[in-house]
Length: 318
Image (cartoon, rainbow, N blue to C red):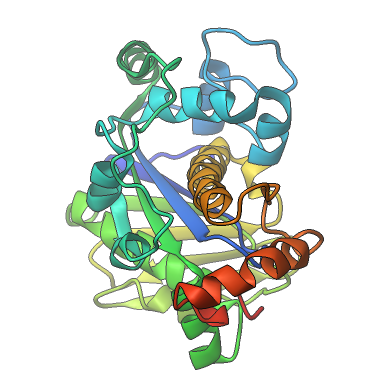
């Protein structure tokens, strides 16, 4: 599924998440989409136009496992990548209104969310990064980069988990919503190649992927620890899915989705921490993960109660 040769122009989709493990802050899943007009191996073409976290900074955009990228180049490194690939809006709220497939109404109800905040740090020259990178990728065979976000603050996250009695339902719901919203880009008989980072230890995705199709069936090929892959039969488009561990390392479109999800999660966590620092002066910020989240929640819970925020509105149940 790296060398793509179809009668019609194929599309490549990558998907990954950030913030699935924390107890505090929003869960973010991101999907990225590009039309592949080149010949041969799209992974090789993409890799030649980008760089990994191991390489020194250069004009090429950084696309890698987002944790590695963030550890090496921080939020600014993530921002440069996002600005390079996507035509954004001036404010975070305006861009999310356009690109969020689920969760923007819930996010807007969070007291800590600041929709009017500028999309990028002042040091980011987004127009230059985007124009230069877009031209390079078009010449390399890629066109029409697009993205979507699936965002769940704590309360709706808890509601999905409670309804399904399964934390993994959050990942399934996000995948269905993002793929479904991308379908408006596709014409009859187009071919779509979707690459997704594996959902924990889950190996079977047929039932989940079936929800994406308006008609036809999802047929399973290999299903196992190393990889699960699927094809559509009788659908309006030719769908192909590959779901595997460390997909963000093997397939750079998933790496780009990982970078995008991590960037949005970090931006929102900065707003989250800023809000609670105003409410509880002197509190140290948190990344929201289990090792530190109990400390943070213990310090804010009385203030949260005074603000009418019950625990399920702040703390994720799983």
